[in-house]
Each structure stands twice: as structure tokens, then as C-alpha cells.
Amino acid sequence: MASPTSTVENYLKEIYLAQERQGDQPVAMGEVARSLGVVPGTATSMIKNLARRGWAEYSPRIGVRLTDEGELVALNMIRRHRLLELFLVKTLGLDWSEIHEEAEQLEHAVSERVLDAMDAFLGRPTSDPHGDPIPSANGKMRQRKLVALSRCRVGAKAKVARITDQDSDFLQFVENQGLKPGTELTVTSRLPGADATGIALGESAPLTLGTRAAEKILVEEC
Amino acid sequence: MASPTSTVENYLKEIYLAQERQGDQPVAMGEVARSLGVVPGTATSMIKNLARRGWAEYSPRIGVRLTDEGELVALNMIRRHRLLELFLVKTLGLDWSEIHEEAEQLEHAVSERVLDAMDAFLGRPTSDPHGDPIPSANGKMRQRKLVALSRCRVGAKAKVARITDQDSDFLQFVENQGLKPGTELTVTSRLPGADATGIALGESAPLTLGTRAAEKILVEEC
DNA sequence: GTCTGGACTTTGAGTGCCCAAAATGACGGT
DNA sequence: ACCGTCATTTTGGGCACTCAAAGTCCAGAC
Image (cartoon, rainbow over all chains, first blue to last red; front, top):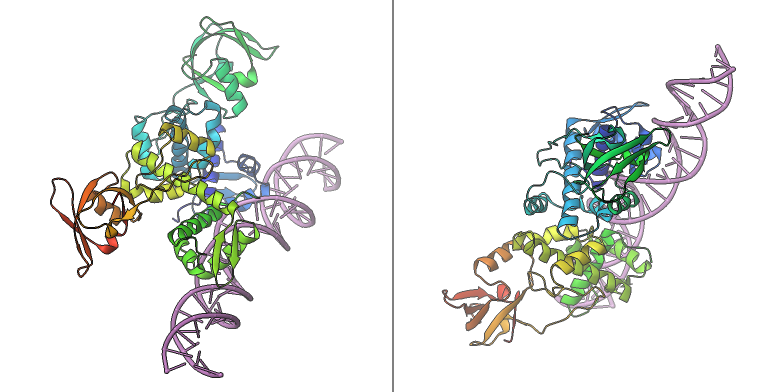
């Protein structure tokens, strides 16, 4: 198997993440194109390429699904990405909300050797600054059972575990409100009419989140 | 001026280094091709490109020379490369002799922001693990006046300042003999017939170096 | 002055990736 | 059964970079 170009690496990574988002269904070309920022025609021809080279299975007008080979490459990229994010934040002190794009560039350039040195330096961490799990070197990723904040029952105490959106503005917001992973909170109200969830954090004033936002915040022990 | 692709960055960097090696003479196409690992035809057409885009001046059958614009890009790449090398050695504990290729990959991927964070983390260093000077962010590079070990007079005391060869085997050798930058030594003999220089390092047994090797080791205060 | 070897340049072709726009197919509404 | 819509696929073309091989030029030998 020829080693993937960095474009291919990106395709495989995004397909994996999309597949994960939608419960292992084949991923539609439109979705691939949107994730990669290319026009649909480009996605189609690129996906055929991936299929021809054994990284994916392609069913016309249905979608694409990674082979085991493809999944391995994808998990390796995700590992790189998340380790880099953690490294940038913890070691170089970069801002939480800025690191996604940086890691996006670097993930294709770091060698296995450098990656392992970083992994050791960080103490073999299991999750990145957003709470996303870091796959191990052999491609295993531990899955915690987390619940979206938008689904917690009123009165529940919960701990923020993961933010499933890399958008810089959203991350800024989460940071400003003190909702980073690790934070403990209580769900105080649910207003289905207003499409909102109310929460309280320790001392500070209560806070209301729209469902759209509350869906992107995953917590432990709802 | 469109921003350079990473291939262009490599060309500019290598031209700069070649120009520096040979005292600012225009660099021949053969030299460019050899440095970049491409066939001569490729070098010619690429250089024309650089010229068309304002980074270099090209005189057919003479050679190429960087413009001020080109030099700025080149110095920036050299800065990246050397900061990365230092970072890999000092922070991640990688081996001296392995870092050149790593940095070669990474130098195109690190953003200005990450680079500055690394620079700060390392305490604004002025030279890399090989003793090569690190240009400042605005493209100035301090030049120490160094002398090749092969030219030191017999009896001189000197301090190793710079190793001008990135070849992994040679670096291994230098390390094994304890000749890394910073080491103090005395020139004990010169054997022009045998094409060699004898040196002594503190306690350990004296050592003889061929001229080829002694030329690649630069020292202070010959 | 001519010849010749080696450096250099040109030409033609290929790869990987991308887009725009036209063609095709599938699916719900009528 | 037919239509329109919209996702998808196909087609044709472009850009950046590469090589192989044929052509050109120059300098030094004779």
C-alpha cells in the first residue's frame, strides 16, 4: 500500500469523523465535500481514488465507508491531531481556541518519532484540550459514555467532559463562561418552548444555553 | 507577492545556503539541482519561475541569485529550521544526528504564532544545536568570525563553535568523539603529508582528524 | 580555427489535485 | 406515469511540480 499523501490523509480523517458522527453509516459525497472544503465533483473523483487504492469502499450515489486499512490511517491522523493540540496548549501555552488550525497543518509533518517523543513528554495522555479521546499508537480509542448537556434531566449534577465543536468563536464562548472540560455544574431548568437549558456553576450566576449549544457540550454522569 | 509554496520555500532556502557557501556568487543550476535532489531541467524551469515571481534573478548559463524579497523568505525558513532543531533536541530530547530531516518537514508547517511561542519557550536562542546562527524574526543573522579547525595553527587553544555538515553519520562521529559545540581543545599537530590535524581534548586520548573533517568543524579564537 | 565533453536548456509527457459546468439519476409530489 | 428538484457524477481544463530525453552552448584541448 503506497503511503498516503497529506490530502489523502485529510480525506480519510474527515470520512472517519463523519462516519463516527452519524453512527457508521456510509458518508455521502456532499458531506465529504463540505468537510474538506471542495466542490462535490472533486470529492467524487478523490473518493474513487481512495477506493482504488484500498482505503475505502465506494458505492455510487450511496456514499463511502473506510476499510480497515483506511480506518487505521484515519485513527493515526486523529492521534496526531489531538496530541499536537494538547502539546500546543500545555507546553507552548497557545490559546485553546486557536490550536485546531495549527494542528491541522502540523499533523501531516510530524514523524512517528517526534510524535512519540511528544506523547512521552505529555505523559501518555488520553484526551486533548477539548476532551476528545486520543487514540493509542495502535489505533484503539477509548470511548467514554457521555451525554449531551441538552439531554440531562433537570437537577442533575454533571461534569463537562468534551466540547464537540472546534469553531474558534464557540470555544471562546465556552472559555469565557468557564465551561471547559473538568468543570462541574448543575442543570437547573429546561425550557423546551424557549429551546434552552439552564445551568449553574458553583458560585457564579446561572446561565442559559440554547439547545444548539447545549448539544455540543458533553458531560459525565448526567 | 503571492505566498510561496513549500517547494518554493525549499528552493529559496537552498539557494541562500549555496550563495553563502560560495561567497555570494550566483549559484549554478547544477548546484541547485543537486541541493534539491531534482534533475537539472527541473531546476532550470523552477528557477525561471522564482525569477518571474520576483524572488530571484536568473542569468541563463550563469546562475541564480536571490532578490531582497527572496532572501527574506530564505532567512525566515532558516530561522524556522534552526529553531525547530533546537526545540527537538532541548525540549523533546531527540538525538542530535536525527533532527535535520525532521526539521526539514516541520519548517513548512509551523505558523508564525507557534514559531514565536517556541522561540519564547527556548529563551530567544541565537544558535541551534550545530552552532548555526538563528536569524531573528526580521531576518538579521549575527555572524561570528570562526575559523576551520583545519586552519588553526599548532598549539592554539580553541572552542568548537559550529559543525557545518548535517550528515547523520558525521554528526554521530562528532558526538562520539565529544566534539560538540562548546568543547574546548588544543591543536597538537598538523601533518600536511598525511592530510591531517591532531587535537587534544582535556583528559582523553589525543585524536587525529583528516582535513576533510577538520574543515567542517569551525572554532572560536584560533 | 575546429572539435568535443559536459553543463545547461528545452520539449513533451505524467501525476496529483483542484474547479466549473453539463449530464445523469433518484425521489417525492402530482 | 410524469416532473421538477437536488445530489451526484462526468467531462474538460488548469496549476504546480516532476522526469526523460533531445537540443544547445561554451570552454578548453588540439
